[in-house]
Length: 66
Image 1 (cartoon, rainbow, N blue to C red):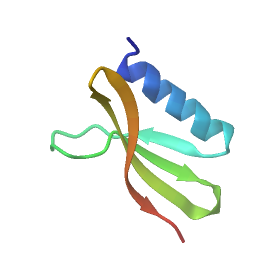
Image 2 (image 1 turned 180 degrees about the vertical axis):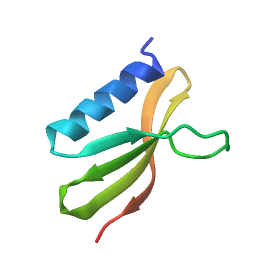
Image 3 (image 1 turned 90 degrees about the vertical axis):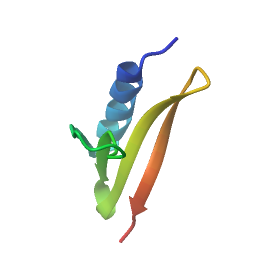
């Protein structure tokens, strides 16, 4: 089974390959997304990496487009 850390590394690589940045959040508050994704053209996304039924998913909880 794929680990969450491997999925986060994959997400980070995808974002950086497209000229963006993928910052990891560390919070003690429940419900805060794992990653902030900033892409060219002002695209911002907050992503949560979760395991659902044994399958790894990358879920985008909020997206802000200019």
